Image 1 (cartoon, rainbow, N blue to C red):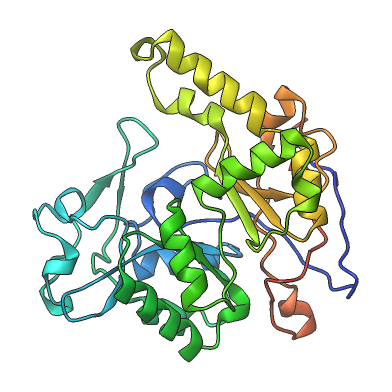
Image 2: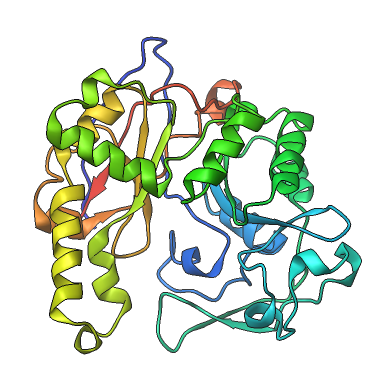
Length: 322
């Protein structure tokens, strides 16, 4: 794969951020950095460790809360898919949670499974303790006030406000997160993404304050790769096409990044990448070929000894296939 620098944006503090491929520890992102799933079971400590070992700059994980008020890392509230036991996490104490199945289907790839020896559902605090300097993106999976409060307490306890971002597609959940702890950067909810689009197309966006720091969305076109085309109606395909036309706007991304907002996407290969001044991103060919840029959350502390920080606008480096 050929590569070249395509964008650069400097913060006034002149801090330099190094971007590497971003990997998630759940099944859909085993492929973020390597071509092929199956190294580890989703959301396990082994999966997180593997991701960090191969150079991941930021982990994305999902949180739930148990009956005894322990915050655990799991994509699903109901454990039927992942453990074979039809029970909700909130109905069990942590010590009662069943282990993951030995093999799990990879949701984004047909006839593919991931597997691993580590089948224990971990606590969020274990992840914080194991990776104290690794930025983490937390998806609050359920609208639960206690869960939000507990996550906030853990972030404060481990002094991770500067390298943690949280939220959900739900506007209500994001609002609760912000009210609980405004020091932790938040994601755009789906409702806010739609509002941003409306403001952008009416020309009002420059005049509206924005408190979110992370604009994370899937590329609409990936839906066509996840479903059999013949199972989709013409209207569904049209809506996907229209969404892609409306959402994938270079001018919008330039505006958001100029305001210090991190713009990140899931692309057709399930890489999570960010961009600041995507000069060639408006090209459909480029959109389909962009690979491997991580969210700009990881400062080059390995070289400078300083800690990463989320609130700076980084220098961004992208790589494109020829």
